Structure formats: C-alpha cells, structure tokens
Image (tube, rainbow, N blue to C red):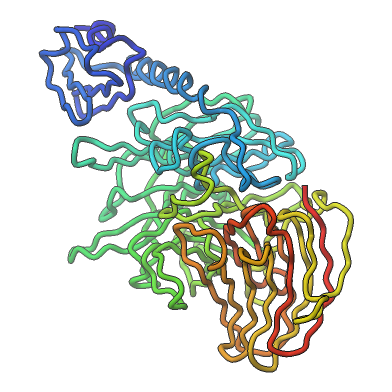
Length: 548
C-alpha cells in the first residue's frame, strides 16, 4: 500500500489532522474516522485518539513526509480562514498586540530584518485554551504601527505536530531564520518528544521548514527542553535552551542547556548551566542573553521558586541575572532579580534596534490563566508594550519605548487633592498615559485609584506602615489570576510613577523604570476616572495623555 493508497483509505487528504513518526510506523490522526474504507479498517486503530497505525513495506522517504506536512498545513489553512476576523470586545486594546481570536502567549522571533521589525507570537487560533501552537506574525517599521502578516508557521509536520513552540529569529544577509521547538505527543500517555527546528525565508513572509537541527536531549535532561535563543559569540553562535534536569535521586531542577554552532545548522552540546543557583525551581523557560554596555545579562522564567510575598502563589516567575561567558562558552549566572513585579508578565524577548538600544516585549499573561472576561469574545491575552532597557547602578531598568510617545494626544495637566472635591478627574478613556510623583506618606496609606467608576477600579497603594507599594485589582472584574502584588519599599522617598493603560491592561513604571508592575485589569467601559485617596492631606500634580 502506497502513501496515496493509505490516504485514500483514510477518507482522503482533507480528513488528515496529523501525521506522527514512530520509528518505521506512520500514525495518521483523522478528523472523521468513519470515513475509513475497509482497507484502512483492518489496520490498528486507537479510537480515543482517532489514529490509524500503518507500517509501510518501504519506509517513507523525506519527500513523503514533506507531502504529508503540506497536506496537513493546507487543511489547517482552510480551518484558519474561519477565525481570522477580529472579534468585537470592550476589553480589546487599542494599541497593544492582541490576537484576532484564540489564545496568545509567548512573543517569538523578535528581530530587525531588512529595514523592518519582525515579531511573532504563540497562538492557538481556534479557542481560548493551550493547544497546538502556531506562529502568528506582525511587522513594523516604526514600532508603533504593526501590520498582520500571514501565519508564519503551522503545527503541520511530524516534528512539530502538537505545537510550533517558542523560539528566536536570526537575520543573516537576506535570509530570515526561525529557530523553534517542535512539540510532539505520542499515544494515550502523551509521551513528549521535543526537538529544536529551523525554518527559513528569503522574503520574510513565507517560510520553509527544514526540520530538526537538534534531535536529541542533553544528558540528564527531560523532554522539557525548549525555547531556543541564539546569541553571536565571536566567530560562532550559541543556542540557549530552557531545560529541566532530572538528578539520579529524581529531583527536577531548572537549567539552561547551551549548544554551539559555526554555521547555524550543525550544533554541538556545550554544557548545562545553573548549578551555581542550586535548587532554583523545577524548570526554566524562555531564556535570553544580551550585553548592556560591559555587563552581560541573562533572563529566565523559572517555575517553582519561592516568592518574596505571600500574595504571590503562582509558580511562574520572571527575572534577570548578571552573567559571564568564558572562552569555552561556559555561562555563569549570579543572583536572580525579578524583572516585573506585577501579575501578568512572562516569556520576554529582546532585540537590538539599529541605533543600539535593547528593546524588550513580553507576554501579558501566565500559563495557568485561561479564564478572563475577554474569553466570551473569543480571544485571550495580549503582549506588553515595547520597553527600552538600560543598565544603571547594577540594575536593569525598563521604560516604555520612546516611539510610543507617538500615540499621545493632547497633554492634560491637572492637580488632585486627596479626600475633597478635587480628588478625582475623569479622563474619558481607559487608554491613557499618566505621569506623576506621589509623596511617601508619613503613616498610613496613599492610594492612586485608576480605571475607576466607583465600583470597579484598580489601586496603586503606598503603604508606609508595611513599607510596601501595592498593586490591588481586587475590585476589578474577576479573572484566574491573583488580586494583589506588592513591592518592598524600605525607604520614605517619593515615588515617581508612569502608567500606561489600554482598556484592560495597566503597566506601571516606578522611578524611571527601576521597577515595573504589569497587570490585566478588567473594568466597565465607563471606568475612566483617576482618584487620589490618602490618610493624610496630600496633593499631586500630574500629566496625562489619551493614547490611540
């Protein structure tokens, strides 16, 4: 029986959902198993997975597997056409990147190529759940106006059948190269197989897959090995992978796996990094590595570390570390610092702009958050604003990219006085930028309330007694996430605030980017006021701009 015969016996090419490769066996997952002919019904069939197992007399060649991938991709393209329209939603952002429909997560492949910024993101377009991920694609020449491009990568091949997972892009000459993790799940036990894969494009829009460039795991590493980040180091390239190591005693430890290549196609394993941090979570995801002047900085997203606040009980964290590379490409990491102290920040990616600035964007969400008010409108999650990074006094600062000032309308300058008729101002929109300085209270609390209609709002609280800055969204519409985040503030200096809001999101930058706090905040459409509340007399001067 040929490949053409088996496809016909399984209901035709349009009935094919997946093709899996298990040694010499071909496993075909079908949309409607009732369409099988008698020829296919004699083959082993897994009813709960709708999968037919076929062992061809002559193993399929590469061209056969490529043909299967093209068939599945075409079926996915047909299905995708039904979910391309942007759904109407009161929570949809005006200027952040969000999916037309479906679930968005990690930003991917953020790079500058041939005069344009390219940004990809993880997307499951057919529902607000974590399932087989695609790479959506947007481009921009100015970092403000983003154009949607055709879907870049589909989970259509035997090496990425259950998800084109996160990765990085490299611009080389006129070619754009995408490195990503191919995710495959086998059988009812969903055995995980991960490989690091390559796709290339000569026009920056249409991509050709080349399959795995790393098809085995490092010693002692589980199949949780993903999210390639590429870094040029002299005459060669390094690939960093988020990894999970299993010790002889069965303990799971977050680590970075490092590979080396001179041609971006042949890779050799160098080492596992992270033992200097001892037991620091059970998995590290989404690594990044870049220079800030003379300082090498690493970013990781560790899972399972201890939080610095009893309000923070989710396992997913984000942060940066000072790093150093020796002549043998051995990476050493130092103390971990939280990158964003808010609710909804994960999996950041950075790139270097042509003018030398380091730009970063993250996922405004977390892996376990799937119930939010936007779900009823068939979309979930968005990306953060673009941020400029700088290294100051041994810390990584982040501020909104200067290009975002193009979004500003007219300047509104105003004064608020706590606890009287001058305590509030209706901005008329939930998409705004606000800048002010809050005096630190001598005792008690001072609160800046935003996105407020009297019953729904979000509070930024300066708590002198507890020496904390607290972000409290407990009076916003309920979501999966927690309701309070706090930042230790062991001094009494005034707090400089820059807020960027966009309908259902709030990004707070403290003291010119020394700290950041990011949150999804779902409130009613009329929750457009800002209010000052305090246990003591206080007034502030502020500036605001509507953003569009």
